[in-house]
Length: 142
Image (cartoon, rainbow, N blue to C red; front, side, top):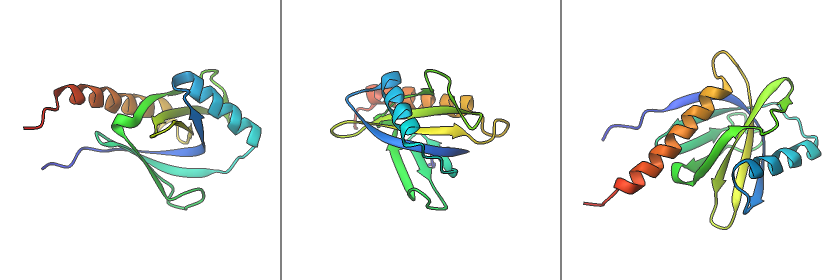
């Protein structure tokens, strides 16, 4: 079978937090506030690989982690920070994923607005979310 086509973007990983039952903009708000309170500012470059199967975040320098995978069906939201706050003059965006007992929000900031604009990353992640929902409706096992 053909391998799913992948889009790969270079971006900065900022922070991840458990948002309990919060989803969408409310989850991002919680995560952004937690992040701003930690005052953490590690310049952590990661690769975001987006395929129909989900989003894989790889931290090749292993500063924070090695690899995180969010299956497409678990990703419920991806957008800019609701208040358009910037981190070191870069646009901040995040994704919210469902975990078995809660939700998790992971924040990123744009690394290269020419090669990997945040808009393109958000659009790409939103595409797999809708595709996931559509294919769920059509997935009758033969």
